[in-house]
Each structure stands twice: as structure tokens, then as C-alpha cells.
Length: 190
Ligand SMILES: C[S@@+](CC[C@H](N)C(=O)[O-])C[C@H]1O[C@@H](n2cnc3c(N)ncnc32)[C@H](O)[C@@H]1O
Image 1 (cartoon, rainbow, N blue to C red):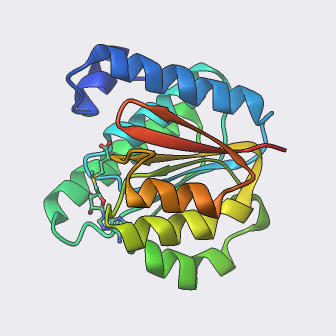
Image 2 (cartoon, rainbow, N blue to C red):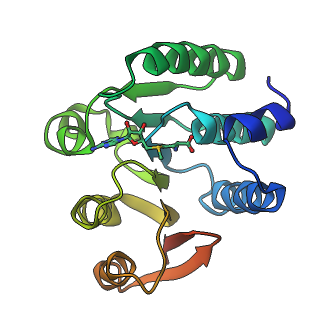
């Protein structure tokens, strides 16, 4: 398994504090969802955050199915390197990991319906793919009734007071809502 320093660098982060906050937050979600629900990420790019979730699931001995989605339209070389790299890590950890090289919309319209039941409920959805308002709202709308109790959607690059943040809040009126540096989270209460 990779060292934490390596995962930190692969995440492309510059602030160790932010990395530690995300780690702690994800470990709490794993604990609070009591081994129920898969982990899903939209927007993989070079696999930094995917590797972080994988590594933490391995280290905490709390493995879930993991689904990642990214069409890699603009990055064919990065796609090959990252998918091979994440595959090796998933095998080392013993993690069941599936990657779908499709846009989020195709995942919603075509892939989701053919998934096994245990991959249709989520403990953690990291939304870091398209960042435009319409896409983020569509993602939140799609996942809100697919979260297990205490399951969390974590949305990157967004503030609670932006139009997108306000729309997410409105869509999830019965969720707890909070923020991390440059991110907001929406947690299903029960
Ligand atoms: C900011 S990067 C993700 C960074 C990654 N989560 C990390 O922390 O290393 C955004 C990624 O979203 C992907 N993306 C763009 N549009 C998408 C869509 N409609 N569906 C899924 N992924 C998309 C891009 O290909 C890109 O790799």
C-alpha cells in the first residue's frame, strides 16, 4: 500500500491541513454508516482522491464497493496510467472497484439501472466531476434518495452561499449540511 505522503502528493494538494481534514471526515463517514453503502466518486482525473478513499478503506479495515466515473475525454494517456494504477491498488487492498468511463449523465441514464442492488446505495459520494451549476444540481438530485442513513455527499469547489450551494441545500432540505475547506457536505439524517 502507498505511504500517506505519496497519497498526499498524488492528490495534488498543497495544504497538509486540508488533507488531514478530508481524511478525518471520510473515516467518520465510514464509521457512521456502519459498513452499509458503497463509495462513489465522479471525476477521477489522476486518481488522487480515489486513491485516498481506497487507502483509508484499506487501513481502517472498512471495505465497501467503490465506483468511479470519468469519461477522460480530454485525457487518454492519463486514463490508461490512472486506471492501471488504481487497479493495482484495489487488488492489493482487496477492494471491489469498478470504473465507468462515461459522463455522469450516461451513468445515471444507462449504467445505474444494471448495477447490482448493493452498488445502488451510497455511504459516500464525492462529486468532483463537472462543476457547472446544472451538472452539480443534477448529481445531487440523483443521489439524494440513494444515500444510506448518515451517508454523505461531498461536493468539491463550492460554497454554501453560491447559487449551486443554495440549490443543493434546497434539494436536500432534510439533510444536515456543513462545509469543509472549499467543499460542502450533505448528510442524510437517518
Ligand atoms: C477536478 S478533476 C477531478 C480531480 C480528482 N477528484 C482528484 O482529486 O484528483 C475533474 C474530472 O472530472 C471529469 N469530468 C468532466 N466532466 C465529467 C462528467 N460529465 N462526468 C464525469 N466526470 C467528468 C474530468 O474528465 C476530470 O478528470
